[in-house]
Length: 364
Image: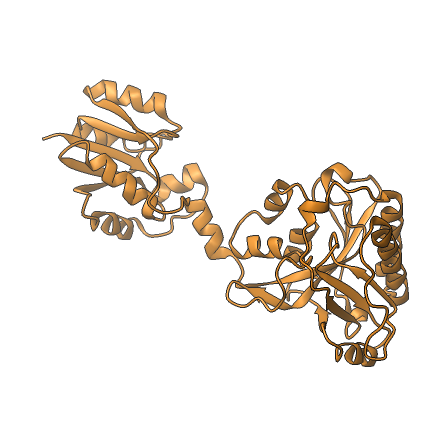
């Protein structure tokens, strides 16, 4: 009988593990699976086990391809299973191509004359996932806000960052979830950042990988009305609950999709963007709606100079304090600031307008 041995943390057993077990079992007649004990997991991975050891053992043992399950309790990282391996004396130790402990495992195989077999990567039966990704998904929030930006946009893109400059934005409600998304898609409200957060991903990293900035996931995760320092990564200077904005914000749907990555390389006046960011920062410190409206007007002037189509000057008999496109513009939503809640409500009676409010997560 050819005995095959595999080892790992297997902290949350998923389809990728099952596929690996099946391929390892095909190498012989008997498969032993060793998983790291809760104490070993804590010592080397610095995290709690997802299940008590006896539950994990029963779960893995229930798989048809598994003939025996042992628990690795040794303290040597990478070969916590050494004692059980020497007891069983398998003919084959199977590992994946990305195994980090090859020298240790090869030496262990040499002690008993076992063959060290690297299983090649085969097409996964399901989209690949890791235990870390599963834990992040479980811990991800059930819903998340989107965001509007007032000034300083583009200065969150690392290659455009300026020392001493600021980005000012605000998380908004209604919130979104994986099942309910009450906004248009591709709309300039940071939807990709919210989606990454809801999926348990590194939302800042995901946005930077797209070649755009970090402001969307930063304020969506932080919530509130925020002033950020321009730079390669988010650096929060000030957070406010945005109470002075309640009843004063509305969105206008332009009818055209928004595409930030597609316009990131266009020519624009970064000096004017920096000035608008400073104006917005001062307004947040002063809790001044009029000051924030001035920053929005300055930002809108930059957008028009860039070639964006003009947004409606008024609607519902209301002329707002200020307006601008959200995000990179050239489509998506426009942000409107009104002087009073009554003005905002009248504005939102017009087609394609809707009210929004500042959003601050309780306890943050």
